[in-house]
Length: 131
Length: 336
Image (cartoon, rainbow over all chains, first blue to last red):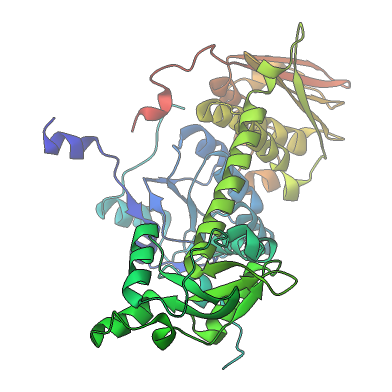
């Protein structure tokens, strides 16, 4: 097999540290390991949409800050959550995230701007119709 | 001689980065082992020895043949010193390999008891700056020698034993159904879900998913079950008067999940199965739920979904996922 073909078939990764940098983000769970690989991005404010149309191992961009966001992210197997437009989560959200080991990040950008920045930097869209 | 206790970092190192909570749990297991393991668990008991009048060249041969780096020196069964490779190197620098052991051996003897914990030996290493310690029994008689390498090896062996025990536990969990012989074996998980308890919404589903993975379920099936029961659990929280029961029944070849509640009941079941139909309050919608997609999501995740409802009596939602006999060779997760 040609090397280029192998590279094409290899999944794309972006380190969470790089994601945070591109998002101009603040890590809200400072004790957590951010040296992890993110495979794609997905953005929504509807939790049912997140459950229905996302794929595992990606980062969730959302404007919601309640604890259900963490539960939803856990069930849909997200690796991290970014709150858009500088939003800060409720204390219960933060403690649930710590319990489930899901890093929380706050970014000053809105949903469209942040999606565009991450996509432009090479993070693929993880929106899908397949389960 | 200093009596400073070595820090964790000196003993275990930091692997070049900050210690996270996850690392901390690993470290504490090593720490635990350092207290649990005793010197006699890791020491070298089968000792080669030297006499003070032996020429160094002869000891060098003993070290080489046995692949060791030091020996205790005995005179008439009495311990008088230790000779290590380092001592021999000093002698080689002066071209004195024919000199007797007594001339180059280390007379400073630091001993540890064979029932001491490893952590005590580590302290003795740091305090004495020696490479090997003498191990004595309760009567003070020589029983062995211990090096830092012995400690590392001992801890790694113990961690490996831990790991194997954990693997065995996992194996037992995932072969639960094969090991139990009956006409029909099922495992039932039952959760009481409170109405309007948004704070804990999803806890039961999270536990269900963890249990399925623990029992060796295919990750893709665990994901489908997890999403289906999560939507169903949220429905109990959002829509019921008094909450309800979330139940998962696991059999070798299928997983059946259900929710039952005692009201209010659904007037027209066909209506709630339409995408976008919702009776959820504004508060629920603000939380990202109640978009009228829950049941449709569930239907996508499961192989069979049934909903029975009587107004004033309650609703029963049943979801079934078939578990294939053999793992499909290419499963859906491999896309991307």
